[in-house]
Amino acid sequence: YQLPYLMHVLKVCSTLISLPLQMKKEDKDILLASALLHDVIEDAPEGFFRAEGYELVTNYGLPMEVYQTVKLVSKRSGASEEELSQYFNEIKKNKYALLVKMADRSHNVEDLHNMKVEKIHKYVEESRRWIYPLSTYAKSNYPELSNGVTILKSKIVSLVEETETLVALYEEKIAEKDREIATLKAQLQGATSHEN
Image 1 (cartoon, rainbow, N blue to C red):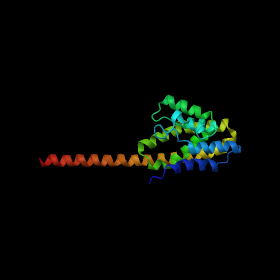
Image 2: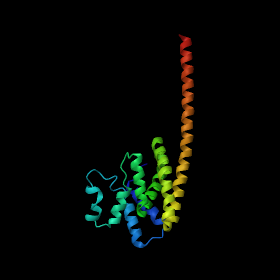
Image 3: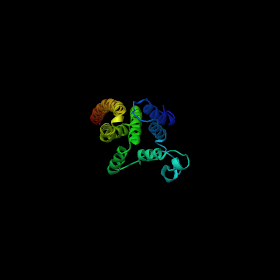
């Protein structure tokens, strides 16, 4: 069952609200506005935002930090390894983007069981390669966020590892069924050739 997309951004925002983050009210407002808008550039229909979302500032009067955060967490589909490296390195430099990205991933991994196996592998690999180190960096460089980051990482790691276990069992069962089918085909071909 597919929930309305709005539920995703609300969940990312509510996750951040629930974290024990040592931030001033103004900083939390920027963080939560960024969370609510985090996919507006990346997933907006073509032409919805001209100038890559700068209208968030010019037309809607949001703080520049919200625009900068939303722009940082907007990832181009099909990004190369080099582009992903640059993408995550830029996120590291902005505590709002870092928290939004981690909260976004924490919600996305809740849905891994609904994804195709190929996409699950991609999410697991990306989480291990980029998200885990991002949380380590955050705890070292933003100590005021350490408790919240630890909670997010714990959730991400547990769901990723649980999903990996289930996918491995699923793939093992598929391989077993493929072997059974191959054996039955061979037996059927053998029986058919004896009849001729």
